[in-house]
Image (tube, rainbow, N blue to C red; front, side):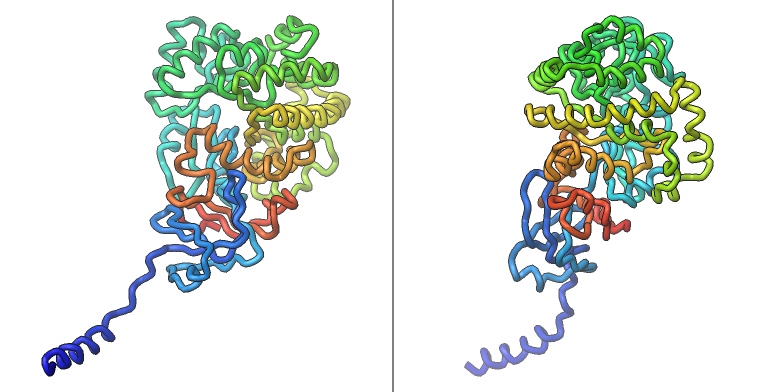
Length: 440
């Protein structure tokens, strides 16, 4: 009895002298409304992050007592997954802007391969995660001098193999390729487990869907497929900018029934559309008197705004007049209605912007894209999915990001307000977390 009592006394000071346990989590975002990105909403939870990943989403009162090295109080605020822009062209100055606006992943669909493919292998909180195509594949006479030109089956096989071996996560096809050439590219890419994104011209959207493309960019080829004069439309794409103009203005001539049939065919074939409405809108605004008053332009290098984005340059090359741009504005509601029609028919819409084209500001433009979807008839929840879980699935990164759940990378955006009530709340960013690191 005496010995047992003495041993108990000895253990008391030893236990009391142990140092406190260090926090097991790097970050805790406490008491936030959590929009998970896949349709689920948790009204109040604490999200714990450790080693760059979400460790748990805790709704219990006991979470308040769990220590973390850094804590963010988020009562009355909303936590959403890091946003994804599925159609970009990364510039040397754009990475910080993506993160500033909560865009933590992007899909680059044409760039210099020796720049973008090595960059896509770097997964760092200093910039967004990148899924890259490298250079696009196009036919002879391509508008882009750095495109990879393919003209037969042999050149297709070589080009696709080299791109995939170099690290391409998607193959991009362009306007001067016929439907048969696109089908050959899809076959080669599928054999290597890589999807195909299509900016169409000489092939219609229906032809590309039958060929097996994964996504259609800019809604290209849709108006061509619904047109009553498809041959005229195909001829227009002999010149890139003339083809864009023809495709854009054709929307004003289309019959609703023809568009509905095209939508049904694309849905049946499982095609994702990446509308880039922000780009369509930007082109329509090139002569607006308030064009340069957008506060987001302050983050864009002055030489880009003044030279690369000079409206007179593209308007001269494209032979656009103020009257042309006025017609582009009339097209915008038609494009918005088609996006809503496509979603209502069961099709998948994924958000993309085509930044850094003229006045499509990296990061900021994605929020405008979502606003245009909602203004056209999508619900805020549908719009958010287009830039989170659905986008992650298209990019092939759904195992890592796109939703808020344990085991995913901690790519998170904390905003003021509720984006499900007002999609503009996605702009009211308080914190951005990229790979577990608070970068804003």
